[in-house]
Length: 191
Ligand SMILES: Cc1cc2nc3c(=O)[nH]c(=O)nc-3n(C[C@H](O)[C@H](O)[C@H](O)COP(=O)(O)O)c2cc1C
Image 1 (cartoon, rainbow, N blue to C red):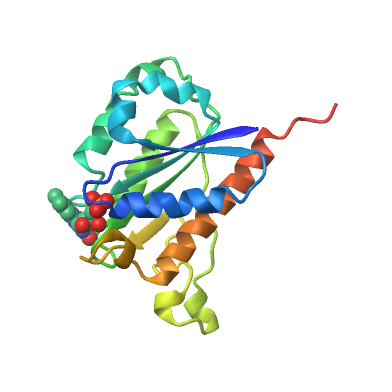
Image 2 (image 1 turned 135 degrees about the horizontal axis):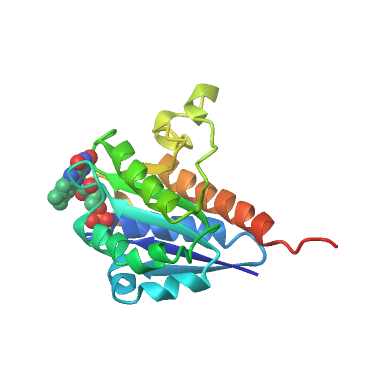
C-alpha cells in the first residue's frame, strides 16, 4: 500500500476542483490510499508529511508564482528539509490560473525546486496533446501542452462550470499516471 497526499491551496474552489479530479484518477489504481489535504492545515502540522510515500502539490498561480498560503506551507517544512526526512518520495505539481499561460510554468518550477531541495523524485505529465490527433481543442487532454506538471485554466464561473472538459480529463489522467508510478515505487522488491 502506498500513501499519496494531494496538498493544495484554493481561495475560490477552482484549484480544489482540479485536486478532486486528480484524486478520482489516482483512486483508480489498486494499492494507493489517497488523501486530499489543505496546505493551510499542513503548514500547522508539517511533520504529518513523513507518513506519505508521494505528494501532488497544487496551488493557484498568483502573480506568476504559488499563492501566499501555499508558500507558507512550503516554508513550514524547513525542519524536515534540514533532516532530509522526505528524501526519495515521489512528487508532482499542478496549478490553476485564469489565463491560457498566465505564467503557470513559473509556479510549477517553484514546486519542482522545492521538491528537489527535499531530495524527492519528480514525476511530470506525460500526456500528448490530443488536439494534434483531431480531438477538439476544448476536449483535448493536455491541450495547454504542459509536461513538467499539470496546468488547468479556470474561467470565472463556479468551479464545476469553469473548466474545459479537456482540463478535467487531463487532471484525472495525471492522477492515474502518478498513482501508477507510486504503485511501482512502493511495490515490494523480489528477493
Ligand atoms: C492575487 C492574484 C494573482 C493572480 N495572478 C494570476 C496570474 O499571474 N496568472 C493568471 O493567469 N491568473 C492569475 N490569477 C487568477 C487565479 O489564478 C485564478 O482565479 C484561479 O482560478 C484561482 O484559483 P482558486 O479558485 O483555487 O483560488 C490571480 C488571482 C489573484 C487573486
